[in-house]
Length: 453
Image: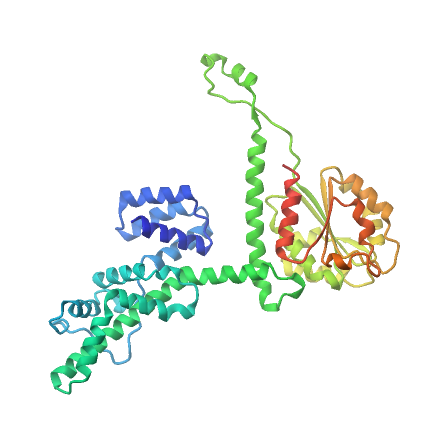
């Protein structure tokens, strides 16, 4: 029972549901009370303890139906229904048992009956089918299942009967061949089902991990949607982590004096606890992004990441520039993200890059929005086409803000070369880091939120 439930929870987690250890223990208690029947009641009960949202409820129901049922068999063309008299007898108990299993079709639409279900489940466990990772392994695991069921004896008997030309031997060979074929198909169908539960999510996770570590500027068009989904998951995880930390920190330390006063009427028994609470600033982030062609890909994913963090960021403002700086907060908050980025690149993405002009525009129009609570995140390569970098304004910006984090998509070996002024900005930055991948973005945003704890 524990092994079946553990496999189900693992399948849930692979599908994207965040079933915790505590929830798994609740599911184990539920299973101990209810057993595995009736099926509909078990599905409802497990859904109540393992799913925390509508999306997780949908995933739970989908995985439950897949995990706790064997797939209907794909029937061969021209295959006849099982004989009412049952399968022929060979006198070999092992072979006769397999013939009985192959003839067990009491389920709907050719689905296996109880005996075959149980035999296939035992064989799948013995063959470690849940360890499948690639679709190409289906034949291998199906073969291991059949070996565990003892198919070798049936195949040896079949080979013997095929060598005998008598009508009785040929009839038995036909029955043995049909049974072997049905067992093969049913084993293959179960392996494919387990691949959908365990192998496919593992393959997707591997491909996502590869994509997350790939340079953002080199993503193929086919990888863009995968990256968007990966960033959404990373942002959700990051937001949940910092929300939990913020709640723990807001509670503070126990205030013994206030606790004793509050419980004087209870003979000092501490029914009510009082805590020393420290004031914590809510995260306030200002993103200033160079949207010229050389860094457009990195900007797209930084802004996508930031706006997926809305639960963890108290206030977020975004600015984009190539030469003149523009507040792009409203389109990012009100339009679909791809539409907002297209509008931003259309309105701001053309022109010769001028960092000095961008700092001047920020100073003249938005300086009051930056104070000691603000973390400024700059994304750009610092290449200003030989114009005045306005270090005086950038130094003043650094003095007003809580922190200044600069993300540069160029590798450090190119910093300061040609028209790059980034090394001149570096003394005023809290940190200056190379940003090439989604993992780099995650690390920087984690650092930005960490400063508010």
